Image (cartoon, rainbow, N blue to C red; front, side):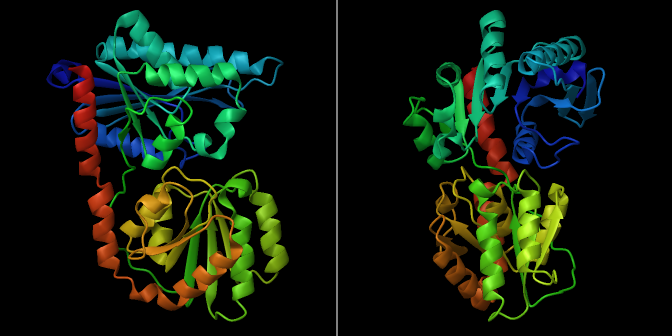
Length: 388
């Protein structure tokens, strides 16, 4: 992306609360895919900033492709009293550094695209106030469904509604999320922009187990309900021969889930925990499994379910919001959240029937709903309508 050809396309400045980074390569990977799709029709600059242990000064990592420039900024983490305020000013300094660089190396953006409330939307609102640049807000946070939004203080909730409703354009990832936001006073004028699934060619692999089950999730048990899957697989292993569960992900409950696995599977023959994996490594795991389990209590979309379909794999998913908008009996089994009986019955049914699902039909279905080109077309229409 060169300064002398920016006049050919409008410039989108994307401020994101989540984004893949060196500490968490899976954080907001779906936002990066959206940024790539937007860059099909616009020049895009991405700003993401977070704290980092051990740093003494702000560090800016810059990554450039033809129409996409990503600025990942890391600033020193403070453990002093009032650290939240310190972090806010360091975040603001990081933003201003990248903003000035944008104006110097490129030009004034035509639109601000803020991803995930609240901080990015506040910046976008302030920029419009001071410089007249329109902004749109895209939301994917599940807190509106889980009750976490209501647990936040009044000022936070008011600012969320104010910056979202004042935006020139609004998007979210599913109708489930839209419905949950509007019941709290958010504008209902929201475009639905599903996550993107990258269709990849099938690699060669060697089978190790008769039935390989995969679960990819943040290890946060009160949201993802991983422990129920562990218990169910161990219990069913007594009558389902050759069954194996692989858990991919990390999070605050990683060690407690690991202890549970060791307690129930001391020989470590039934369950394997891999920790964090890159998006490419997750796709490799998907190709190597026979089916996926997603057992969450709440999901605004469930990217991993859509990714499983793109690899031709059927899924067991809970009716937790987003998944039931695209999971049906042609591509998997839907169960009630928190219902261990239904979970075990679904695993047993899928164990005997996963081969009956047509992998090519599943891949085609995923491509039809979640392709890069479809997302590029959606954002092209939304952004052009906002600018014009």
